[in-house]
Image (cartoon, rainbow, N blue to C red; front, side):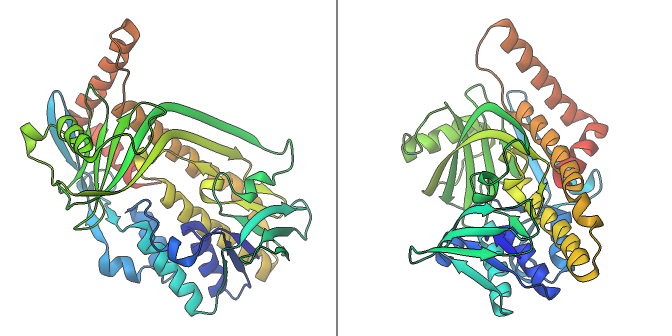
Length: 388
């Protein structure tokens, strides 16, 4: 088994296959040190935590993860908070930075004798529609290489070799550009709220998400095409203060901005997710906007589904799970896409004063009012916010 990519999907899959005695190698183009410092998502759903616990992969998050169950909305009509652990299915998130989860999964896989080829870039998957596919690679020293396997798992993202190698005409792509851009920020500053903060403002969205007691993730909606370095730190903090209404609700704790990136909110799903001996997992299967914290959680879920199916096939000659893999995962993916789309519509609106813009923003205001006042809507929100 060849696994492309050592993110959460590839590492969960590798650990589960290894635990079942199935030989696999993980190919990762980055060096190990980069994986351990690459900041990404940090909110793990209750179902994701259960998967990790079920397979003995949750020691780190149980020691260092923080339970989180509250979000706060700030709008021109005031603010309101939802303790979603007391709504819907009564579930909460665990805040655990993705780089720490990756570090845990890497250590466990390697400590048990797992093989990861760091600095090795997969270039193409050859003959995926046969029973003996191969992967061409550029090895760490620059030499070309070739690996053969019974199956290949593409856990290498939307621009990886797995997607590039799909046979022509074999896939349907569902793509949507939501027309929204965020400036993503990682600040060396303690959280300013004991909640996820969603600020809806006429100047654009702003978001606050705790990562650790000393690190906070912020988002600022900006114009499409804005360079990540275009805003000074003073401008960033002044804009966050304005949009999060710091004068009304208290100042933000400031600190150095240590990471910036531009996020164009897009949705991108491929169907089917199986192509002969090649399977798409995580972002390679479906890209989802970060508005609802679903990406890493979907990746872990899909990895478990595929691992179980591979174990049934390779150890018990039962191919039913592999045959159902695509349909089963797509059901979860589209459910998550639907909620993510709802969140995008809730948090962003046009800035114009024309009739269509006024109509859209009035709808958004009504949705926020419903979320503030309707227990039925709150239960729906909680179930979909935490669940998959």
